[in-house]
Length: 133
Picture (cartoon, rainbow, N blue to C red):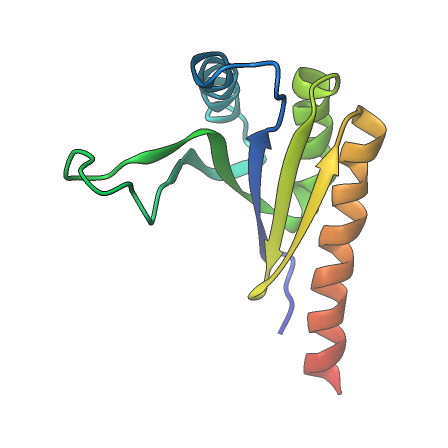
């Protein structure tokens, strides 16, 4: 059943071909630091690489230029607004995941980024409709 405490997972990737890995990682690190202080974010961290390259160092490795944030449903708009203020002029890719369903969105502007809010709410509504039926 859907509750006000439902969470949505956003995976945000810097998708700018003009930036190298170090520049992408720097942007993500700054965003990560800023998001970790935000009350609307339940959890935020760098995204783990589940398929590290053969020969890479043992242990946890992370994907470059990508972070994952878990956000309470009621805070989606605030979260995306904050991210849009920081990354609104950079091409990014966002995966929105709720109730085992995932949708990817590419955004090149703050307006396109806010499309992720609609998608997240749609995903949650579908699941809610299914549980009521």
